Each structure stands twice: as structure tokens, then as C-alpha cells.
Image 1 (tube, helix red, strand yellow):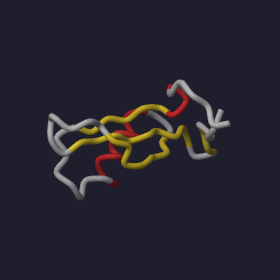
Image 2 (tube, helix red, strand yellow):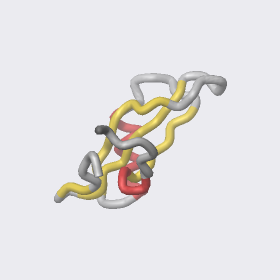
Image 3 (cartoon, rainbow, N blue to C red):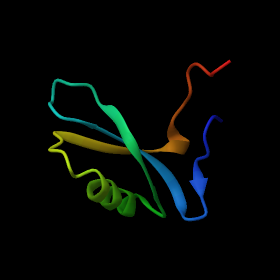
Image 4 (cartoon, rainbow, N blue to C red):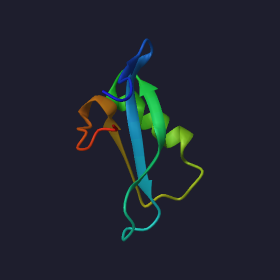
Length: 70
């Protein structure tokens, strides 16, 4: 595992977003929350300075590495 997935405050969620529907999603940051509902609210609050066409959150523990650093 490359990065921690939890803190004492909660789980770490990766936040992905895009401006236009034809663009790929890109990682714009992380939030820490005790549950998915709070993670959504935190992501919307922290990253609402842009007019995103789509924003998603992914629990960091659910990310599956394909190629690990050497």
C-alpha cells in the first residue's frame, strides 16, 4: 500500500472531477470523513470554486494499484 487509507478522523476519499463532459476525470484532491455522506458534503464544500460538470469520490482503500513504484 502506497498511501494510508484512514486517519483518526475517518476514511480518506480521493476526489475526481472534470469541467466538460468530454474531458477525462482528474484527481483534484482528497477529503477525510467518517462516512460517504459527509465525504460528499466535504468534497462539494472544498472544491466548489469551479463549475464542474462531474465530481466523484472514491474511498482510497478501494483503489487497486496496477503498477507499483519500484
